[in-house]
Amino acid sequence: MTPSPLIKLQDVSYTYPGATEPVLDRVVLALRKGQHLGLIGPNGCGKTTLFHVVMGLLKPNTGMLSFKGTELRKAQDFKKLRQEIGLLFQDADDQLFSPTVLEDVAFGPLNLGASPAEARKMAIQTLSDLGLAELEKRVTHQLSGGEKKLVSLATILAMQPKALLLDEPTNNLDPATRARLIKILTGLDLAYVIISHDWDFLAETSQDILVMDQGRVTECHKSCLHDHRHAHPYGRHPHQHSDGKGKDHPA
Ligand SMILES: Nc1ncnc2c1ncn2[C@@H]1O[C@H](COP(=O)(O)OP(=O)(O)O)[C@@H](O)[C@H]1O
Ligand SMILES: [Mg+2]
Image (cartoon, rainbow, N blue to C red; front, side, top):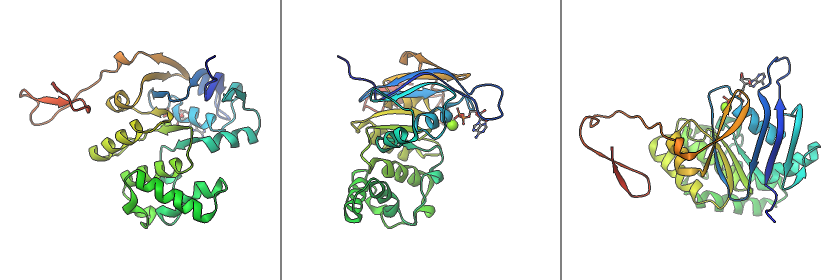
């Protein structure tokens, strides 16, 4: 028997109070163990809202959400889900609030019941696993945008989640940090959904792509992922592009 999806949405609709049109219109979605999904769609189509509904930050008007086969009804059910599903906020400043990086990363485990010593140990381990050990003592609000994004990811991973919801994780990342994020994500044994406008990033990190438009979510075959346009000083000359897997392709 196939195990129940980690997260399942059946005909979930949501309208912001006072709005006339629903932002989510009968959304159907399933995230299974180990599955890597990309979610693309125009600005304002409801992607962030969808993540907030899954996390229980917004309550759908109709439809059903379930977590590991159990319907989510009460606030307490969503609390359990939040212990196992990590949301990386679109804006890292919504995620980080402690004075130092180590305190921020230790906060989650502490909140889940770890002792201060255990939480500290888990935070140090997570930062080290992500190659961020040198940031431990840094003042969180003084980090660069890219560092904040990676530390935000560390705050989630320190809680040892079963799945991640990543909201536009590559926004404002320089190419090196973006490459580092790809390496981290593809090395994780976790299910995730990534919202992104970055087609190349999704091609490298996701098996399946979902498209959101006007409140509806539909599947898109990965072969439709081809929007690679670029300009650089060598554009007019024969040159090669790496596919990120060590292979070069003619431009
Ligand atoms: N708190 C809110 N109250 C009312 N409308 C909102 C609120 N947050 C977002 N919206 C509206 O809902 C729509 C979807 O927003 P959002 O989910 O943030 O889109 P996306 O992440 O796809 O860019 C937008 O039209 C946005 O203006
Ligand atoms: Mg958004």
